[in-house]
Image 1 (cartoon, rainbow, N blue to C red):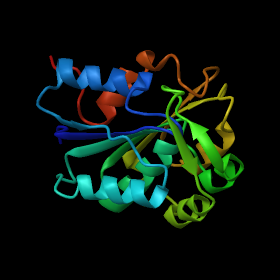
Image 2: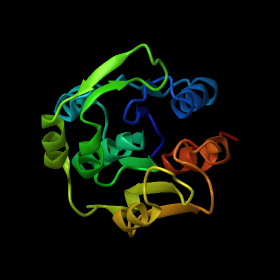
Image 3: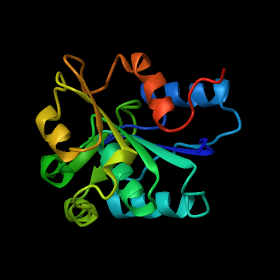
Length: 197
């Protein structure tokens, strides 16, 4: 089924201005202008973020939509895919954000605009815990790009979480997947939007 709708979910402290989000947006604009593209700025509250996302895609066709998520956005993308049955690409996805973000409670700055501040409240940790979805319902619908060189997340946890899914394990790399342009063709092939012709 050809892709008709694409959702991109950014990571913690990130935004639609992230390098990867902009690369995906450019690819959609240049090669797949017919695809509905949405990359929302997610609120700090995980419950509010998921409510916003699920509301925004409520009318999307499940068999021709896909979601791409990076880091915390990969955790959210997994929630979306488990709930909708759509295809999902995870870029160095967060596996246990409730555990990992518990130490980030308090005032935070936005990665792409240090002048922007937000507060990560203690109750957000429990909201993350409530979003955990258990084992993958349809592993074949997931593609994880995982860098062994990720300085934030453990690649072993990421590959274990997506056991049975397609996994591209990079020997080096970093959390930001600075070489994402080397993998974007595979990402688009997986979600049903390969290069025309």
